[in-house]
Length: 441
Image 1 (cartoon, rainbow, N blue to C red):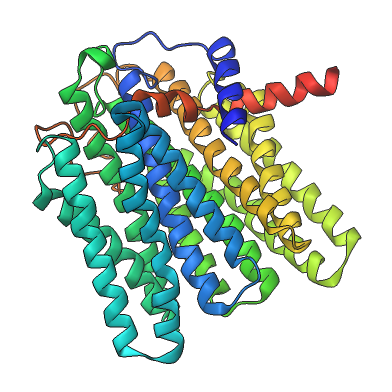
Image 2: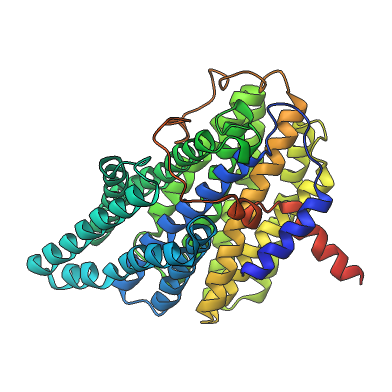
């Protein structure tokens, strides 16, 4: 995975043009922010999935836990780039071990064992204190232990809230909590990256994380990645015929409303209405058709559903091209959207085949891919509307999609280095062009 990402980044630097405005979407600071958003939000997604899968006794539980450990390993790489091997090992000893608390919490829930639950919560509290102490020492007090405790404890509470509601069968509450917890990770990513950039301005060439263009990129990253999460989880749950599948659809509808609001803030109500029409048609329902076809082993149904998705890719690519006045070319946008659909379908097919390790490898690739889409689409919009995104704050009508919160401040942390900005700043164009080149070879 890491070698593949590095290869994609090298190709990215050669193929993707740099935007020249002072408030451009792609800067050292915005790359750092995107990296943090990516890793932190992926950790949340995998942590929640691992607990649900373990509680249900699903066959892919170990594969999800392995993906969660891979996410922690990616974070360890960042720590080593700042603190060296010893510091990275200290980080890993504390951070990676807290992924092991799943068993205690799940077993307590299955057995209705209050003492076991209390013991698991005590272990989590020990982690919160130990990790916040590590961060305080590593940053020489720039991130005080108390502040670190507050942030870490809030995240752990989000994960437990989702799990407890899931166990109780309160699925609407579970997915409301899921969306809140997911959004929190992007707030944290903005605050942490802002602190790092404030502490190390020369390393980030004087760029900042909280320009209007940076906020636009982050918003699009969040919306794109959240969609691929619901698509993947929803199709898995549909195939397994889980009780909560309808509530994932509810979360996806709420997500669509957020996406529509973001479009409206840029292109007005008419543009938002056009977006919703294209987004819903031949898209969400087609994914359900794919699931039904798999359950019924209906190849004709699968082919029909894929046809709808290809139509969606063409229509949505055309919409994006027209909306951005071809700053994001329609043909390229269509290829990118279809590449996303192919990744979702590949992960689902691997899941259905019982190749769970491959399914979650593909999911991680798919998840990273969406951050490239956010960067590329954001760049096209900023190029189209430089005046709208050239000020100090976002347009007043920009929706609240979980992207508010802290910016640059003096409570700083040097946990994440710019190396991850290089490793994970992947654009959708790279993957599509690499694929086309291989097909032509």
